[in-house]
Length: 206
Image (cartoon, helix red, strand yellow):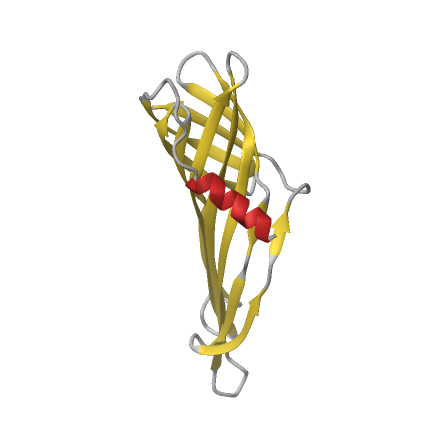
């Protein structure tokens, strides 16, 4: 794992490759690994080396529930909300291998943040009500190796297909009643072969 991390960092921090064409370019587009993981990507640099910034999985849900809609004999009510976002920053190098096909390689640093909160108010018959709030916050820094192919259409569009082996270190804190830390979890996750390919479609801005 140490060699993998050092290799990806080398891809990100590798000095700009000298190329005959130093034309500045910028691209914006969409990326997706499946129906549940998609986002936006922005790339800027030269024809052969670009910085890449991506936002994925920006989502949230807020809901309220009651066991009696007429509000006359409520015995239970609750509310929940969730929020997720992942950001990536990295370096991408391109090497032309066919007329319209480029080999791409590089690396990304990633960070995912996720939170969830669920609160309940219980009204026992004949007794005073009581409430309970449970929540968690999840932080997942990671690192990705980037390798794949780009196909350049006539015009400004480029279709990309990337394989992204990763190493991630998730941390999770669980709380009761907003402030009391109930438990913490941490670990290590990685993926090499059993990971979906990432598809991108970008349009060149200049």
